[in-house]
Amino acid sequence: MLTVYAEKDIFENIVIFNDRTPNWYNIFCNHSEVCLNITDAELEAEEIEGTPIFEFIKATGGRSVIALKEYFGSIYDDNSVIAAKPRSVFFLSYSAAEAEVIQNSYGVIVQSAESINDDILTGSYKRKLLKDEEIVEGAIFGWKSLLQFAFPPSNSVVISDNYLLQSTERVGANYVASGKSNILWMLDAILPVSLSIPYHVTIISEDNNQNEAWRNRVAGQLNAEINNLRNYDINVEVVFIKSEMLHERLLLMNYVNSSCEHGFYLFKAKDGRTVHVVNKLQINSYFSALNNSQGESEYQIANKDLSLLKKVCNELAAHIDAGNPVYRGAILGGCNPNKSLKNRLINDV
Image (tube, rainbow, N blue to C red; front, side, top):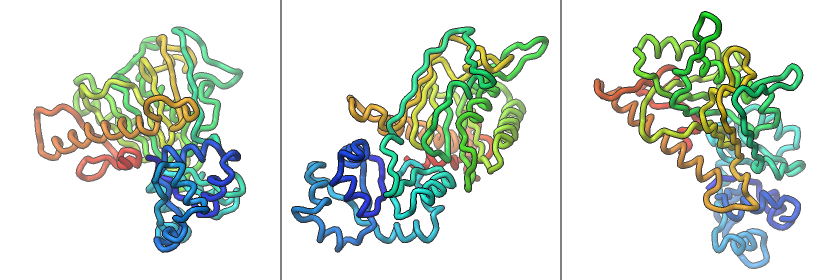
């Protein structure tokens, strides 16, 4: 379940006046583990009939909140601790302006009682793209034209696409790394303008039996060119691996699941605006189907996708550490000394 950290008064207002923020009320009751800035003794005193906490317990079928006063103290002492909770949400005692600064600094949702965004986790986007269709609006084209909307905050992204890094396209007399070009265009459209901590980017793909020199060159180029996109540090990890468990083309962010049916090599390298093949792009916030929900939420699906990617990458790292010459794969750049990944999303499951 989504972990929510909330001041008691903000939590109580959402529960009592649930018609004002119905989406958050639904998320609290049906999809969240709620932690409050209170002590265990204070919680026990509130678990009686007539209190908002008691009403919440009834609404959830018996699930109470969690008292976590000490952790809230650490948040107010040093706001940066929230970066270690990349898929959690924080309702804190700050003004709307202060909350926005903290949110933008660390790429994690921070809400103020003064201004609660009830739709921040409910957006979705779908687009069918036809071969040779040009995506352009004035001076904006390609990925930036497609993604002209506000993403929820983020400090990490994981891209998994089997054929992305080996994709090339002939432009004139030369072959261009079209998959890499699309990664750069896409990241330039979704990376936050500013951030106070390093952003984490992990790219997982196959190498089509290329040698170590090719892998090192591609990883080095990606690291340099992705870091050139913004003025803050970006930690880039590249994983080359072939696994029967990795088929979907996924892009996962802090509060968003995305998929591209035929891969993220979406636009031809010659111009960055002409669609390469018939494709379908889907982007869903964690609770985009909140009021018409059947099956699993996007949050639950993200847990499974991130867990699967973590399992595959950890197995690869273990084989590399063990010097297994049969196991084909490589993890390059930005990772931990034991080849495990640093990515916050991967390590949040």
